[in-house]
Length: 184
Image (cartoon, rainbow, N blue to C red; front, side, top):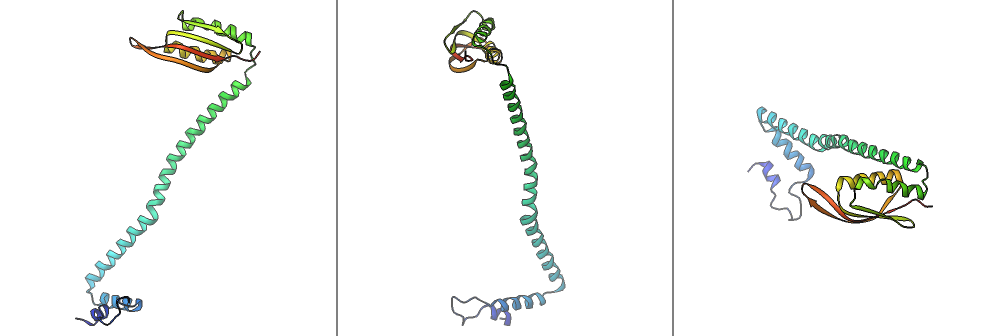
């Protein structure tokens, strides 16, 4: 057994004591490195350099690159959300700027929209709202009526009790729809 190995494996040390002191460890490692041949030293140095580069890339470069690449996607998502919010803001401002509509005008406009739904829909007007009874109304007609009722008569849906039914290749709706009317 060499002198260096003897330093590393001391039989007279207490069980809780380190194998070699910090200074002794460095000294033993230095002696072992010096005892290597020139080719082995170059391989060991190249391996240490490669390990240092892997650690540098793994700890320093990759997390920053992931963050940088993810920030572009996050920016695009936030820009899309901002565009959507601006569109909603413009719609809200248009609705707020729309002239106030009298309830009698709103009722007339709702009645004028009746042909959109066809003969299978009945409109009944109450004090502050209107009720629409539907029997097998095509989905596209109902969607058109809802949009136009909102824009033209300022009627806001309050309650919908609708059942979807299939009629051939198209979907039809039956039930009742209650909308609010502008105040008198």
